[in-house]
Picture (tube, rainbow, N blue to C red):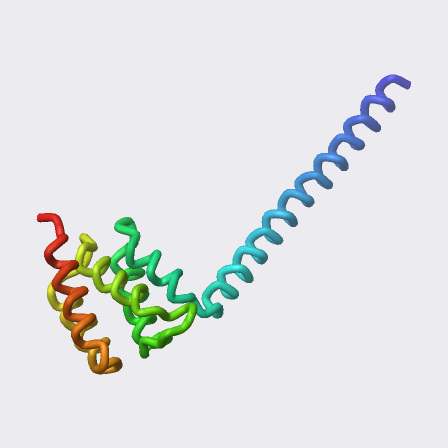
Length: 140
């Protein structure tokens, strides 16, 4: 009688353990699905100019992410408009941060400046002043 009770207990524990393992595997697969969906939504979401400014400002950004942020500024926000989101100050800050960033080089700065001037010729003086100020403030 005691042997049958021990066998039933072992079978019960094996069933409970199987259920717990199944739940663990199922929940980890579900987490991966949720993470994948979240990443896809982030990719589809258009980054704001402030988000792009934060990426450019971050010295820990990878070179790929840094260059991607610069291209998105020109692609998604090509013209300097005077409104709440796209103020001249944000563009000037981006230019200065670009000049100070450790992962930048002369080619990137000049190309970005030329493109911005081409897209916004009326702000050429301000853009040039921001680049000069950024380069002057760059640490050696």
